[in-house]
Structures are given as C-alpha cells and as structure tokens.
Picture: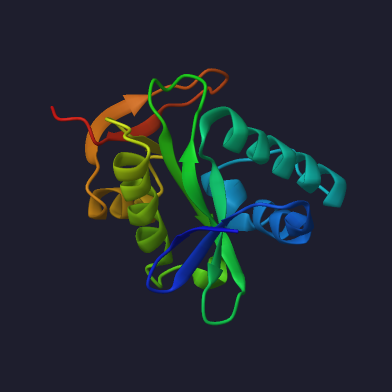
Length: 169
C-alpha cells in the first residue's frame, strides 16, 4: 500500500517479498561505504531486516519505505523516518542503488518524507545524520532545508556523524 507519492516515486511499506531488493541494496558498495554493514548477507537476514523495519511502523507510526519508480514499479531505494538510539528526534534516512544516484530521487523522497513527518505526523523537529565524507548526502540534506548542527556520536559508533536538524538555532 503506498504511503506517499511524489512526481516520480511511490513510497510503500516494506513487505517480506522485498527481501531480494533489500539484499541487493544493503550489500551494495554505496550502502556499505556510506551507511555501514547491517549484518544482511542472505535472503533470510534480509527478511529479518524487513521485520525490524516493519516493527517500527507499528511502534512509531513511521519507518523506511521502499521507493519505486512510479512509471515502471522498479524499486530504487529506501527513504523515510527512523527512530534511532542516541537521537532525540526522528531521523530522515535514505539509501538508493548506485544506478539511481544523481537523478534527484534522494532529494525528492527525502523532501516528501520530511513533509509527511511535519504535516501528517506533527513532528516538531526532524534530524538527519551522515558521514562527513558523504558530500552527496550532505547536499541532499541542505537542499531539503535541514541546517548543519555540527557532529554527533551515536551509541556503539567509534566515529562522529555530521548532524542536521530542522530545529531553529
């Protein structure tokens, strides 16, 4: 069932049948370099990842959604809102298969997710994190209106992440 639609994308809740796509995305070089290893190595662990995302829908009323090209139905990536340990506010997150980079899909889906969080869910503050070297992601976050708020170290990480927020200074 679609959650959001943009000019080019349909964002929908993940379902168990998405395991092959999730496996491809989470094993991609771009995902592993920019987001990290989520312990997904086969279809079974991809299913476990989907189960964890789906539990967030029930617990928080939001989560990561599959982003499909509306014209073809082809999955391109994930985008949505996430509740992360170490962050006081929901986080807008996204990841796309590398063949879809540079087309504005991350900006389009992240802007829609941000609007959904603020307008539909009434979230007063939404944040985002990325690695300091991920200049593409930093550009997306600035483009959708988040401001640079320095760095933050999340529990379990041995590095700082670039931190962005919708909160005023």
